[in-house]
Amino acid sequence: MTATLVGNFADTSNEKAKTLLGWRPRSANEAIIATAQSMIDLGIVTDK
Picture 1 (cartoon, rainbow, N blue to C red):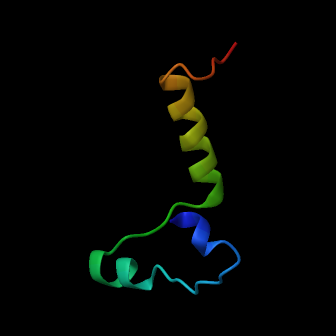
Picture 2: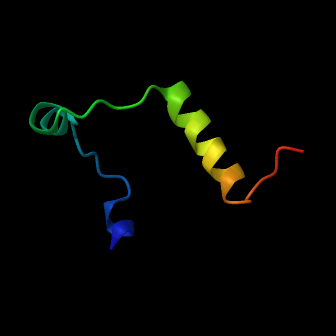
């Protein structure tokens, strides 16, 4: 069903999560570093 959404624009926001839950998104740098570390931890990539 996701393919039916291709080409459609959806205006979304994270304001509700920030307001109700006090959630704060990570910066792009933090997200990239965390993703890379997870991949190393899972053995998907190695640090060698």
